[in-house]
Amino acid sequence: MIDALTIAQGLLRCPSVTPNEGGALRYLKEILDAAGFATHFVTFGESGAADVDNLYARFGKRAPHIAFAGHTDVVPPGDAAQWRFDPFSGEIADGMIWGRGAADMKGGVAAAVAAALRVIERGAPKGSIAFLITGDEEGAAVNGTVKLLEWAHARGERFDHCIVGEPTSRRVLGDTIKNGRRGSLSGMISLIGRQGHVAYPHLAQNPARGLAPLLEALYAPALDDGTPDFDASNLEVTSIDVGNTATNVIPAEIRIVFNIRFNDLWTPASLSAEIRRRVAKEAGVLRADVTFQPCNAEAFLTPGGAFTEMAGDAVAAIAGRRPELSTNGGTSDARFIRAYCPVVELGLVGETMHAVDERVAIADLDNLSRIYERLFDLYFAAPPSS
Image 1 (cartoon, helix red, strand yellow):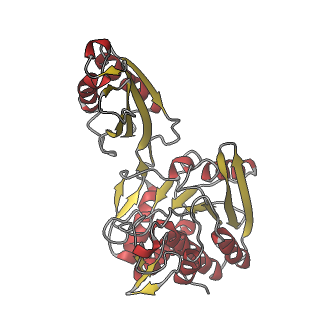
Image 2 (cartoon, rainbow, N blue to C red; image 1 turned 30 degrees about the vertical axis):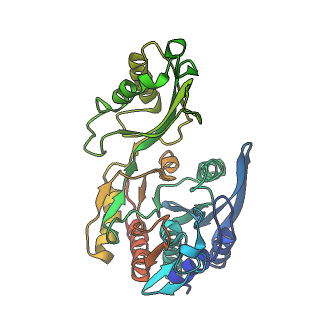
Image 3 (tube, one colour; image 1 turned 135 degrees about the vertical axis):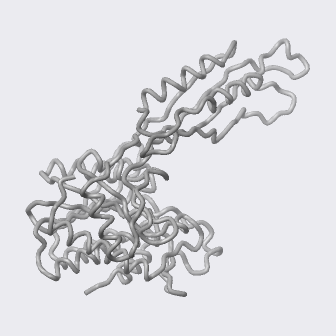
Protein backbone atom coordinates (compact mmCIF):
# COMPACT_ATOMS: atom_id res chain seq x y z
CA MET A 1 0.00 0.00 0.00
CA ILE A 2 1.46 3.33 -1.07
CA ASP A 3 1.86 5.73 1.86
CA ALA A 4 1.52 9.50 2.24
CA LEU A 5 5.27 10.12 2.15
CA THR A 6 5.70 8.25 -1.14
CA ILE A 7 2.78 10.10 -2.73
CA ALA A 8 4.05 13.45 -1.45
CA GLN A 9 7.51 12.78 -2.84
CA GLY A 10 6.04 11.87 -6.22
CA LEU A 11 3.98 15.07 -6.29
CA LEU A 12 6.86 17.30 -5.18
CA ARG A 13 8.97 16.05 -8.06
CA CYS A 14 6.40 17.44 -10.51
CA PRO A 15 7.20 21.07 -11.48
CA SER A 16 3.55 22.11 -11.39
CA VAL A 17 3.97 25.88 -11.12
CA THR A 18 0.54 27.41 -11.69
CA PRO A 19 -1.11 27.00 -14.16
CA ASN A 20 1.08 24.16 -15.49
CA GLU A 21 -0.04 20.66 -14.55
CA GLY A 22 3.55 19.42 -14.52
CA GLY A 23 2.55 15.75 -14.30
CA ALA A 24 1.10 16.00 -10.78
CA LEU A 25 -2.53 15.38 -11.64
CA ARG A 26 -1.64 12.53 -13.99
CA TYR A 27 0.42 10.97 -11.20
CA LEU A 28 -2.59 11.12 -8.84
CA LYS A 29 -4.90 9.78 -11.52
CA GLU A 30 -2.76 6.67 -11.93
CA ILE A 31 -2.84 6.01 -8.19
CA LEU A 32 -6.61 6.52 -7.92
CA ASP A 33 -7.32 4.50 -11.05
CA ALA A 34 -5.41 1.57 -9.57
CA ALA A 35 -7.47 1.80 -6.37
CA GLY A 36 -10.77 1.57 -8.25
CA PHE A 37 -11.79 5.22 -8.39
CA ALA A 38 -13.72 6.47 -11.41
CA THR A 39 -11.49 9.32 -12.56
CA HIS A 40 -11.95 12.21 -14.97
CA PHE A 41 -9.21 14.48 -16.27
CA VAL A 42 -10.96 17.74 -17.16
CA THR A 43 -9.52 20.85 -18.80
CA PHE A 44 -11.24 24.24 -18.66
CA GLY A 45 -10.44 27.38 -20.59
CA GLU A 46 -11.62 30.95 -20.87
CA SER A 47 -10.62 33.94 -22.92
CA GLY A 48 -7.92 35.92 -21.14
CA ALA A 49 -6.93 33.08 -18.79
CA ALA A 50 -4.70 30.04 -19.20
CA ASP A 51 -6.24 26.61 -19.77
CA VAL A 52 -6.17 24.58 -16.55
CA ASP A 53 -6.18 20.82 -15.99
CA ASN A 54 -8.27 19.41 -13.15
CA LEU A 55 -8.93 15.97 -11.70
CA TYR A 56 -12.18 14.54 -10.38
CA ALA A 57 -12.30 11.06 -8.85
CA ARG A 58 -14.99 9.15 -6.98
CA PHE A 59 -15.12 5.82 -5.18
CA GLY A 60 -18.62 4.55 -4.41
CA LYS A 61 -22.03 5.37 -5.79
CA ARG A 62 -24.18 6.07 -2.76
CA ALA A 63 -24.62 8.65 -0.04
CA PRO A 64 -23.26 9.92 2.21
CA HIS A 65 -20.77 11.55 -0.12
CA ILE A 66 -17.71 13.25 1.36
CA ALA A 67 -15.25 15.10 -0.85
CA PHE A 68 -11.66 16.15 -0.37
CA ALA A 69 -10.64 19.28 -2.26
CA GLY A 70 -7.12 20.44 -2.93
CA HIS A 71 -4.66 21.70 -5.49
CA THR A 72 -1.38 20.52 -6.93
CA ASP A 73 -0.34 23.81 -8.50
CA VAL A 74 2.31 25.77 -6.61
CA VAL A 75 3.77 29.26 -6.60
CA PRO A 76 7.16 29.76 -8.31
CA PRO A 77 10.12 28.68 -6.18
CA GLY A 78 12.13 31.84 -6.81
CA ASP A 79 15.90 31.52 -6.97
CA ALA A 80 16.58 27.79 -6.67
CA ALA A 81 20.14 28.56 -5.58
CA GLN A 82 18.73 29.92 -2.31
CA TRP A 83 17.19 26.55 -1.46
CA ARG A 84 18.98 23.91 0.56
CA PHE A 85 17.70 21.30 -1.91
CA ASP A 86 16.28 21.55 -5.40
CA PRO A 87 12.71 22.82 -4.90
CA PHE A 88 11.34 20.00 -7.06
CA SER A 89 13.41 17.16 -5.66
CA GLY A 90 11.17 16.01 -2.80
CA GLU A 91 14.32 15.55 -0.74
CA ILE A 92 14.04 13.85 2.65
CA ALA A 93 16.35 15.14 5.39
CA ASP A 94 16.26 15.93 9.10
CA GLY A 95 12.86 14.29 9.53
CA MET A 96 11.37 16.59 6.90
CA ILE A 97 10.30 16.38 3.28
CA TRP A 98 11.43 19.44 1.33
CA GLY A 99 10.07 21.08 -1.79
CA ARG A 100 7.77 23.68 -3.26
CA GLY A 101 4.26 22.69 -2.26
CA ALA A 102 5.20 20.45 0.66
CA ALA A 103 2.96 22.50 2.95
CA ASP A 104 0.74 24.24 0.39
CA MET A 105 -0.61 21.78 -0.42
CA LYS A 106 0.81 18.68 -2.03
CA GLY A 107 1.45 17.25 1.43
CA GLY A 108 -2.23 17.55 2.34
CA VAL A 109 -3.32 15.97 -0.94
CA ALA A 110 -0.92 13.07 -0.41
CA ALA A 111 -2.17 12.54 3.16
CA ALA A 112 -5.80 12.43 2.04
CA VAL A 113 -5.18 10.06 -0.86
CA ALA A 114 -3.22 7.66 1.34
CA ALA A 115 -5.99 7.79 3.96
CA ALA A 116 -8.67 7.00 1.38
CA LEU A 117 -6.65 4.07 0.03
CA ARG A 118 -6.40 2.55 3.52
CA VAL A 119 -10.13 2.98 4.12
CA ILE A 120 -10.90 1.26 0.83
CA GLU A 121 -8.41 -1.54 1.47
CA ARG A 122 -10.28 -2.38 4.67
CA GLY A 123 -13.52 -2.72 2.74
CA ALA A 124 -15.77 -0.47 0.67
CA PRO A 125 -16.98 2.46 2.77
CA LYS A 126 -20.70 2.87 3.47
CA GLY A 127 -20.87 5.83 1.12
CA SER A 128 -18.64 7.64 -1.36
CA ILE A 129 -15.29 9.45 -1.29
CA ALA A 130 -14.47 12.00 -3.97
CA PHE A 131 -11.41 14.05 -4.83
CA LEU A 132 -11.65 17.51 -6.40
CA ILE A 133 -8.08 18.45 -7.30
CA THR A 134 -7.32 21.58 -9.28
CA GLY A 135 -4.29 23.19 -10.89
CA ASP A 136 -5.54 26.77 -10.53
CA GLU A 137 -5.74 27.64 -6.82
CA GLU A 138 -2.51 29.64 -6.74
CA GLY A 139 -3.39 31.46 -9.96
CA ALA A 140 -6.44 33.23 -11.30
CA ALA A 141 -8.86 30.67 -9.82
CA VAL A 142 -10.98 30.97 -12.97
CA ASN A 143 -10.60 27.58 -14.66
CA GLY A 144 -10.18 25.43 -11.59
CA THR A 145 -12.40 24.48 -8.67
CA VAL A 146 -15.25 26.84 -9.53
CA LYS A 147 -15.71 25.20 -12.95
CA LEU A 148 -14.93 21.69 -11.72
CA LEU A 149 -17.78 22.02 -9.21
CA GLU A 150 -20.14 23.23 -11.94
CA TRP A 151 -19.06 20.34 -14.17
CA ALA A 152 -19.58 17.78 -11.41
CA HIS A 153 -22.95 19.23 -10.43
CA ALA A 154 -24.12 19.12 -14.05
CA ARG A 155 -23.24 15.38 -14.07
CA GLY A 156 -25.47 14.80 -11.06
CA GLU A 157 -22.72 14.72 -8.42
CA ARG A 158 -23.97 15.85 -5.00
CA PHE A 159 -21.63 16.36 -2.06
CA ASP A 160 -22.79 16.14 1.53
CA HIS A 161 -19.63 17.53 3.11
CA CYS A 162 -16.12 18.54 2.07
CA ILE A 163 -12.66 18.78 3.58
CA VAL A 164 -10.10 21.16 2.09
CA GLY A 165 -6.50 20.24 2.81
CA GLU A 166 -5.02 23.74 3.11
CA PRO A 167 -2.23 24.12 5.70
CA THR A 168 -4.43 25.45 8.50
CA SER A 169 -2.28 24.43 11.47
CA ARG A 170 -0.37 27.34 12.95
CA ARG A 171 2.24 25.93 15.35
CA VAL A 172 1.50 22.22 15.75
CA LEU A 173 -0.52 19.79 13.68
CA GLY A 174 -4.24 20.04 14.33
CA ASP A 175 -4.24 23.18 16.47
CA THR A 176 -6.56 24.99 14.03
CA ILE A 177 -9.44 24.17 11.70
CA LYS A 178 -10.78 26.81 9.33
CA ASN A 179 -14.58 26.85 9.30
CA GLY A 180 -14.88 30.00 7.22
CA ARG A 181 -12.90 32.77 5.56
CA ARG A 182 -13.07 36.53 5.27
CA GLY A 183 -13.82 37.97 1.88
CA SER A 184 -11.35 39.89 -0.26
CA LEU A 185 -12.11 43.02 -2.26
CA SER A 186 -9.50 45.02 -4.18
CA GLY A 187 -9.91 48.46 -5.70
CA MET A 188 -8.21 51.62 -6.92
CA ILE A 189 -8.87 55.31 -6.33
CA SER A 190 -7.66 57.81 -8.92
CA LEU A 191 -7.34 61.36 -7.59
CA ILE A 192 -7.37 63.64 -10.62
CA GLY A 193 -5.66 67.03 -10.57
CA ARG A 194 -4.03 69.15 -13.24
CA GLN A 195 -0.41 68.74 -14.35
CA GLY A 196 1.90 71.72 -14.37
CA HIS A 197 5.31 73.19 -13.55
CA VAL A 198 6.22 73.22 -9.86
CA ALA A 199 7.32 76.87 -10.18
CA TYR A 200 3.81 77.87 -11.28
CA PRO A 201 1.49 76.05 -8.87
CA HIS A 202 -1.35 78.49 -9.55
CA LEU A 203 -1.55 77.01 -13.05
CA ALA A 204 -1.82 73.43 -11.77
CA GLN A 205 -3.71 71.42 -9.20
CA ASN A 206 -1.65 68.93 -7.22
CA PRO A 207 -3.70 65.84 -6.28
CA ALA A 208 -1.15 65.05 -3.57
CA ARG A 209 -2.73 67.78 -1.44
CA GLY A 210 -5.84 65.64 -1.18
CA LEU A 211 -4.00 62.44 -0.30
CA ALA A 212 -3.71 62.77 3.50
CA PRO A 213 -7.40 63.42 4.26
CA LEU A 214 -8.42 60.71 1.84
CA LEU A 215 -6.16 58.11 3.47
CA GLU A 216 -7.45 59.13 6.88
CA ALA A 217 -11.02 58.60 5.66
CA LEU A 218 -10.18 55.13 4.35
CA TYR A 219 -8.73 54.00 7.67
CA ALA A 220 -11.03 55.71 10.15
CA PRO A 221 -13.48 55.00 11.52
CA ALA A 222 -12.88 51.25 11.48
CA LEU A 223 -15.15 49.36 9.12
CA ASP A 224 -16.43 47.27 12.03
CA ASP A 225 -15.35 45.71 15.31
CA GLY A 226 -15.57 42.10 14.19
CA THR A 227 -18.04 39.40 15.20
CA PRO A 228 -17.90 36.33 17.44
CA ASP A 229 -16.76 34.30 14.40
CA PHE A 230 -14.69 36.85 12.47
CA ASP A 231 -11.92 39.37 13.04
CA ALA A 232 -12.65 42.99 12.24
CA SER A 233 -12.72 43.91 8.55
CA ASN A 234 -9.51 45.62 7.53
CA LEU A 235 -8.43 47.87 4.66
CA GLU A 236 -4.79 48.18 3.64
CA VAL A 237 -3.36 50.52 1.02
CA THR A 238 -0.91 48.48 -1.04
CA SER A 239 0.33 51.06 -3.56
CA ILE A 240 0.42 54.84 -4.06
CA ASP A 241 1.73 55.96 -7.45
CA VAL A 242 1.82 59.21 -9.43
CA GLY A 243 3.64 57.76 -12.43
CA ASN A 244 5.99 60.74 -12.37
CA THR A 245 9.71 60.45 -13.14
CA ALA A 246 10.39 64.22 -13.03
CA THR A 247 11.04 66.31 -9.93
CA ASN A 248 9.79 69.60 -11.39
CA VAL A 249 6.37 68.46 -12.59
CA ILE A 250 3.19 68.54 -10.54
CA PRO A 251 1.49 65.20 -11.27
CA ALA A 252 -1.91 65.01 -12.88
CA GLU A 253 -3.07 61.94 -11.01
CA ILE A 254 -2.45 59.80 -7.95
CA ARG A 255 -3.50 56.15 -8.00
CA ILE A 256 -4.17 54.49 -4.66
CA VAL A 257 -4.54 50.70 -4.70
CA PHE A 258 -6.06 48.91 -1.71
CA ASN A 259 -7.35 45.55 -0.52
CA ILE A 260 -10.01 44.87 2.10
CA ARG A 261 -10.38 41.61 4.00
CA PHE A 262 -13.97 41.71 5.21
CA ASN A 263 -16.22 39.67 7.44
CA ASP A 264 -19.84 38.64 6.98
CA LEU A 265 -21.18 42.01 8.10
CA TRP A 266 -20.43 43.16 4.55
CA THR A 267 -21.07 42.13 0.98
CA PRO A 268 -18.94 43.33 -1.94
CA ALA A 269 -21.79 45.67 -2.91
CA SER A 270 -22.27 47.24 0.53
CA LEU A 271 -18.53 47.55 1.06
CA SER A 272 -18.02 49.18 -2.33
CA ALA A 273 -20.76 51.67 -1.51
CA GLU A 274 -19.12 52.52 1.82
CA ILE A 275 -15.74 53.18 0.22
CA ARG A 276 -17.31 55.34 -2.48
CA ARG A 277 -19.13 57.32 0.21
CA ARG A 278 -15.93 57.97 2.17
CA VAL A 279 -14.00 58.98 -0.95
CA ALA A 280 -16.72 61.34 -2.15
CA LYS A 281 -16.86 63.03 1.26
CA GLU A 282 -13.11 63.76 1.39
CA ALA A 283 -12.21 64.31 -2.27
CA GLY A 284 -13.10 68.00 -2.04
CA VAL A 285 -12.50 69.89 -5.29
CA LEU A 286 -10.55 66.98 -6.77
CA ARG A 287 -12.20 64.45 -9.00
CA ALA A 288 -11.98 60.96 -7.54
CA ASP A 289 -12.68 57.85 -9.62
CA VAL A 290 -13.16 54.62 -7.66
CA THR A 291 -13.01 51.23 -9.36
CA PHE A 292 -13.18 47.72 -7.94
CA GLN A 293 -11.88 44.44 -9.28
CA PRO A 294 -14.43 41.64 -9.71
CA CYS A 295 -14.87 39.85 -6.39
CA ASN A 296 -15.11 36.07 -6.23
CA ALA A 297 -14.22 35.85 -2.54
CA GLU A 298 -17.12 36.70 -0.26
CA ALA A 299 -16.99 36.00 3.46
CA PHE A 300 -18.54 32.70 4.51
CA LEU A 301 -18.96 30.59 7.61
CA THR A 302 -19.61 26.91 8.26
CA PRO A 303 -21.25 27.15 11.69
CA GLY A 304 -20.03 24.88 14.41
CA GLY A 305 -22.00 21.65 14.39
CA ALA A 306 -21.80 17.92 13.89
CA PHE A 307 -19.32 18.08 11.01
CA THR A 308 -16.89 20.51 12.66
CA GLU A 309 -17.17 18.48 15.87
CA MET A 310 -16.38 15.29 13.97
CA ALA A 311 -13.29 16.90 12.43
CA GLY A 312 -12.21 17.98 15.89
CA ASP A 313 -12.79 14.46 17.23
CA ALA A 314 -10.55 13.02 14.51
CA VAL A 315 -7.77 15.47 15.39
CA ALA A 316 -8.09 14.76 19.10
CA ALA A 317 -7.95 11.00 18.53
CA ILE A 318 -4.64 11.18 16.62
CA ALA A 319 -2.91 14.40 17.67
CA GLY A 320 -4.19 14.52 21.23
CA ARG A 321 -5.44 18.12 21.04
CA ARG A 322 -8.70 19.88 20.38
CA PRO A 323 -8.43 22.29 17.42
CA GLU A 324 -9.57 25.88 17.54
CA LEU A 325 -12.09 27.02 14.93
CA SER A 326 -10.81 30.00 12.95
CA THR A 327 -11.84 32.18 10.00
CA ASN A 328 -8.68 34.28 9.64
CA GLY A 329 -6.03 34.15 6.94
CA GLY A 330 -6.35 34.49 3.19
CA THR A 331 -8.79 33.03 0.72
CA SER A 332 -9.03 29.43 -0.45
CA ASP A 333 -11.11 27.33 -2.81
CA ALA A 334 -13.47 26.66 0.10
CA ARG A 335 -15.18 29.91 -0.95
CA PHE A 336 -16.48 28.11 -4.03
CA ILE A 337 -17.29 24.81 -2.34
CA ARG A 338 -19.47 26.36 0.37
CA ALA A 339 -22.19 26.95 -2.25
CA TYR A 340 -22.52 23.16 -2.66
CA CYS A 341 -22.07 21.72 0.83
CA PRO A 342 -20.69 22.43 4.32
CA VAL A 343 -16.89 22.69 4.17
CA VAL A 344 -14.02 22.83 6.65
CA GLU A 345 -10.29 23.20 6.09
CA LEU A 346 -7.84 20.99 7.93
CA GLY A 347 -4.20 20.51 7.05
CA LEU A 348 -0.51 20.69 7.85
CA VAL A 349 1.49 23.37 9.64
CA GLY A 350 1.82 26.28 7.23
CA GLU A 351 4.87 28.11 8.60
CA THR A 352 7.00 27.56 5.47
CA MET A 353 4.32 27.80 2.76
CA HIS A 354 5.44 29.93 -0.21
CA ALA A 355 8.87 30.34 1.44
CA VAL A 356 12.35 29.26 0.42
CA ASP A 357 13.01 25.76 1.80
CA GLU A 358 9.31 24.93 2.13
CA ARG A 359 9.06 21.70 4.09
CA VAL A 360 6.91 19.66 6.48
CA ALA A 361 7.68 17.12 9.15
CA ILE A 362 7.31 13.53 7.97
CA ALA A 363 5.67 12.69 11.30
CA ASP A 364 3.07 15.40 10.68
CA LEU A 365 2.42 14.09 7.18
CA ASP A 366 1.80 10.60 8.55
CA ASN A 367 -0.37 11.85 11.41
CA LEU A 368 -2.44 14.07 9.12
CA SER A 369 -3.12 11.04 6.94
CA ARG A 370 -4.27 9.16 10.03
CA ILE A 371 -6.48 12.10 11.04
CA TYR A 372 -8.14 12.00 7.63
CA GLU A 373 -8.53 8.24 7.89
CA ARG A 374 -10.12 8.61 11.32
CA LEU A 375 -12.44 11.30 9.97
CA PHE A 376 -13.53 9.07 7.09
CA ASP A 377 -14.25 6.25 9.53
CA LEU A 378 -16.27 8.48 11.86
CA TYR A 379 -18.12 9.97 8.91
CA PHE A 380 -19.30 6.68 7.46
CA ALA A 381 -20.11 5.23 10.87
CA ALA A 382 -22.47 8.12 11.76
CA PRO A 383 -22.91 10.66 8.94
CA PRO A 384 -23.40 14.19 10.32
CA SER A 385 -26.42 16.25 9.41
CA SER A 386 -24.53 19.57 9.52
